[in-house]
Amino acid sequence: VYVITALLPLFGRVKAVSARAQVGITDRTVLTEPRFGERIDVQTPTHLVCALEFEAGGLANLMISWEIWASKLPVMEVYGTEGTIRLPHWNHCEAEFDLYRHGPEGGTWQAVTTERPYAGGSWRGLGVADMAAALLSGRPHRASGERAKHVLEIMAGLVRSAETGAPIPITTPYTKPDPFPAHLANGKLGHSPARCAQRPTVPWGWRPASSERAPLDAWGVSSLSWLWN
Image (cartoon, rainbow, N blue to C red; front, side, top):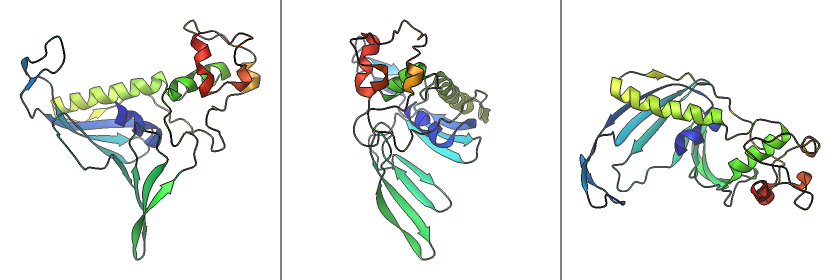
């Protein structure tokens, strides 16, 4: 889930997938209650080698495995016409990554630090905060249901491709969201105070801030909690 979700904002919609799969260790010991210690026969693929074809061009090579004890493989690398980017772990908001630029006499690796918003530090809940700001501002949010449905179809397609031995077309729509504006300060999400002041109807029982809570035009990640109070 995590890797595919991280790939979509980079490369956009996936139009087809293919995969090969197998079971490595055929029986395993359950390590959680209530069946702790029980030996079971493995009945689902535990090692998949996958290919994702993007609508805008390019392929992603993805390995999903429950068979690896240790590895020194890179977390995620992007190969382009002029070089290579080695990205940090998708579960962290690290600001540093490695860049290799190819030149007439070869190339060199260099460490790069980005100044983009929300790079560096821990930003758990940023997707939920962006969704709340989007609902109040009347704009689409980035961690959308459309994105989740697209990821789900990709995952199901990979399993089906491994079972049938054939590529599987992906039919769900997905639109790559714009990145956060470069000038955006951490703790802010770029919503419009004027739009928020209209206090649109918010679904699922959420309610706008009361007068004694954080004003809408000052709303940011740090003041998200009032939405659930």
